[in-house]
Image 1 (cartoon, rainbow, N blue to C red):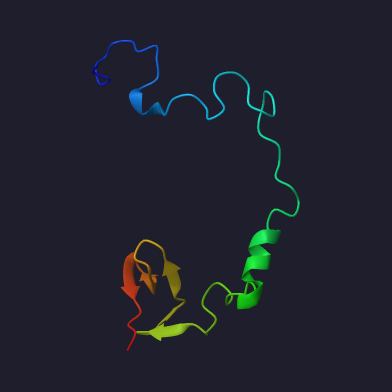
Image 2 (image 1 turned 90 degrees about the horizontal axis):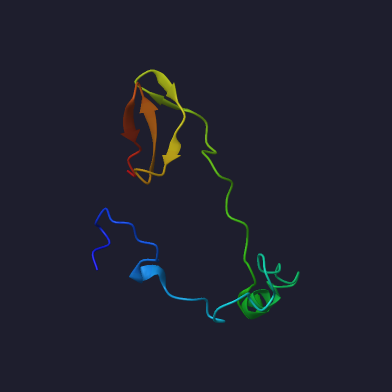
Length: 101
């Protein structure tokens, strides 16, 4: 069956996945969204990580912690760019990466 055709398809595509795991009809908890998780839902994970030091220390603060840099007479503040995945700064619309050496 061609699902890329402009015809009307009143049924789900074959990659839809089929019916719900509990079959047809309402979910075991009834109509509507599922109930919220219990308040201590993270306790098993926390208890499992306890022998290894728990969650560990908090990560360092986000952002550049050092003072601004002087780049060719311009005072610049490095930022983390998720596209390039590196530290650098924008100078007149040009990305200047910080070199690790």
